[in-house]
Image (cartoon, rainbow, N blue to C red):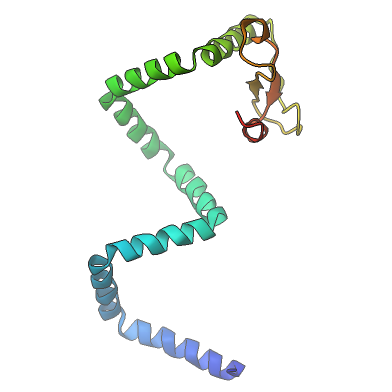
Length: 159
């Protein structure tokens, strides 16, 4: 086992070595990455799998920092892919017709004042804009029987 002074010396040596040979080390790293892209991709993927909290925190910070750029990119994608989006929504409608009709009925009822959307989750009490969970199913008679859940609680129900 190394002593504390030896560890400090090794760290200082490594920092000095890197500062002195920075360009050469960067070139070597770039060459390795270019030669072994699959290995690098696998390493990055395994790191992301082991550190999901750090990845999520980075993504949140990146989105907050580049909000306008992301909005513009999404807008350009929507304009370029109108047909794709239309086809996707038609397929979704055909596949999940009952669910879509139930969701629309809740939306209309909230808009007209027949249902009041609370400002917090019915299960955990978190302040948010909760989703309506159709806990009795999507039959027409159950369209307005909803429990108001936050996204996290709604996801836990398996819907």
